[in-house]
Length: 88
Image (cartoon, rainbow, N blue to C red; front, side, top):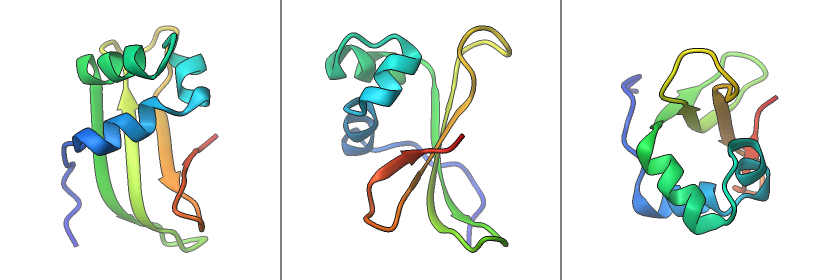
């Protein structure tokens, strides 16, 4: 297992940008605007293994281009149905 961050694919950026919850949190008016926002900030993916409660899979991290501020770090994983889910 590698614990190094990986760049998101174009398909992953589109998938994340299509989530209304992400658009609302980050001020994206629609999926196209959100895609551009995601391309301009820090987005990475990890192949993640959680010791407990036992998650293994993709972990996406969206980090604004400033430390602190109005936009918090956002983490997403894939649920049992393989759909993206924002972690609280």
